[in-house]
Length: 219
Ligand SMILES: O=C(CO)[C@@H](O)[C@H](O)COP(=O)(O)O
Ligand SMILES: [Fe+2]
Image (cartoon, rainbow, N blue to C red; front, side, top):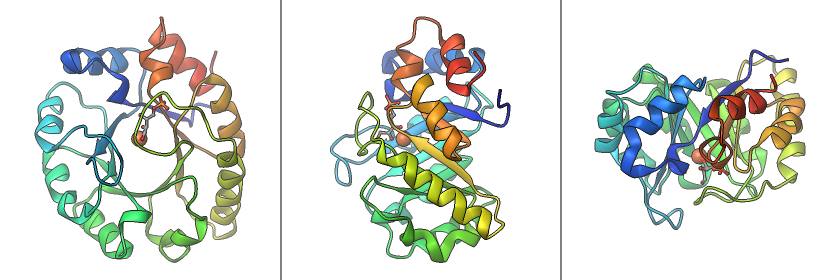
């Protein structure tokens, strides 16, 4: 039983025609955060939510908004998403030559800063900014779509990251995103993950409360 684990359902798998209700449903089912996948059709081959959508759904819940920016030029979107109500902003290392500057911008606004790594991106790219980060998001699928199969190589990557965090005596959350269900959740938590994103495993479940409990490891 691990009560430190947070579950962040991804609204990418929600029924967009009922977005407000879909967020209320996950809140009632025990979600800790709302994971918002922002895709621009350039960095990833899909288009989703902009700041106006986030501002609109900000009215329906007080749950923290975990904004996962899968966009080229993330520097242009950090402030608009913070104004819209984001609490945690994660940028992809692959999109950010000036990663340190972006992290500082997020933190100057009093928000939590995360960096995400694609499955093929080595941990070394965050080595020099580890001290500045609140969270590292390890992608366990190639970003762009919900409902993909978990890539097992993520487990060893999480273990190596966790060892590095411990060695440097830092307090950084490890979030995992892609193909998370009750079974893969157990494996990534054992490796050191503390925040679990799940889209299809929550929105596709017959009982969302039970699905969130199972992902958290409390069933
Ligand atoms: O960022 C992404 C995909 O790019 C994710 O947040 C997905 O939305 C997760 O969906 P599932 O794999 O859990 O269905
Ligand atoms: Fe995501």
